[in-house]
Structure formats: C-alpha cells, structure tokens
Image (cartoon, rainbow, N blue to C red; front, side, top):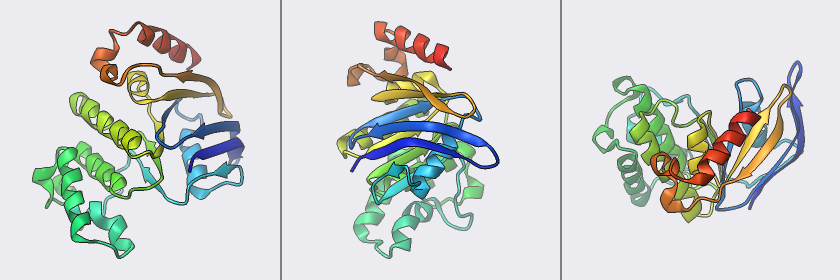
Amino acid sequence: MSLSVNELSAGYASKVLEKVSLKIAPGELVCLIGKSGTGKTTLLNNISERHSSIQRPETFALVTQENLLLEWRTALENVLLPHELKKNVTEEIIHKGHELLAAVGLIDSVGKVPSEMSGGMKQRVCLARGLIQEAELYLFDEPLSAVDFDLRIKLGRLIRNFIVNNQRAALFITHNLEEAISLGDRVLVLSGRPGKIVLEEKINIPESMRDPVALRAQPEFARLFKNLWEAL
C-alpha cells in the first residue's frame, strides 16, 4: 500500500504545515529537505498518528536521529525488541538481527549496551532495529546524522537497496543535499512557516552512479543541486 498525504495542515499553538500533499508508492524512497522549523518532524508525527488527511499502510517503522535505545539491553536485544513485543522472536529473527548488525558494521558489538557505544553506533543499532520490522512504510528522520561520511554512504546504499528490493515505501528526512539526491527517487523541498512543499525534483540517475562521489561527475547533479539549494 502507498502513502498518501492530502492537503495536510497541522500545528500546535500556531500552524506549522499548510496544505502539504504527497504520495509515495511501494518501492519508492522520497527524500524531504528543508530548514529547521519548517515542519519536517511534524509531518512524520502526523503520518505516524494517522491524521484524517493521511492514508498509510497498517505497519510502519520510525527511525529517528535520537537513539531511543533501552540502556539495560544489548545491541542485539534492542534490535529484537519490536519482535519481542509481538512475541514472535524466532531463531530466524535472531539470525536476521545478527545479519543486520553485521550490515551496519556492528557485528563485534552485539553484546554491548548503549553506555559502551558512541552516538554513531547507537544510531546504527536503531537503523537495524527499524529494518528488522519488515514494515510496509518506513519513516526516516535524519537516521545517519551522527555517522562518519564513509560509513554514511554505505548505510545510505543499504537503506535504498532495502526499500527498492523489498518494495517498501519510504520518506527520508535529511539536511544533506547530496544525500537526498543520491538516495531519493524524488526530492521534496519543504519551505516557509507554515511549511509548504515548494519544489519536487525527480531523480533520473542510474543506480550505479548514486554514491555521492560518482554523483558529482553527473551533469544532472549540478542542475539538481542548484535547483534544490535555491528552493531552500
């Protein structure tokens, strides 16, 4: 099932979002960029809470920049938590937990608790915990902000491959224009206060050229970067 947001207006003491509309199909990763305070996280919160203007799949996973790990649980135990809450932790799920921790570069940290990890390591545990849920919709709120550049590229590819290969829908918030262009099938710019979508760019770049280093050699990259930067 796809995600559909239809003219969402939302806010608390004052309006934060105004008539925001977007659609994301299964197998599509859409990146959302915008300055601080334009309502990016408010949008994710409303999608999570299923506002009346929103149609979304029953199952979704939220991966945030805050680690939100349980301090007394090991990396593996934190990753397995969503399945534990559903009482369906099987040998297959445990094996998948190990595989995901290996994929995010933490196979040697399976038994560590959060106090023994750096900020970037905690974010990677949260990413593994999100991917193990096998949700229909993924909401990413700057999930790689504390990760080093080279590993950030690798994890970005992991996320994109997971979404495309498993036909999930994904909305990915980032402040990094290169990351948005390299990961997204489309990039949306949220601007103003209240926030509105002021630009949508479709990314027509081959998969083999999507890492940020190869990307800079693409003529299309300069055009996309300029348009997105000016919209911001």
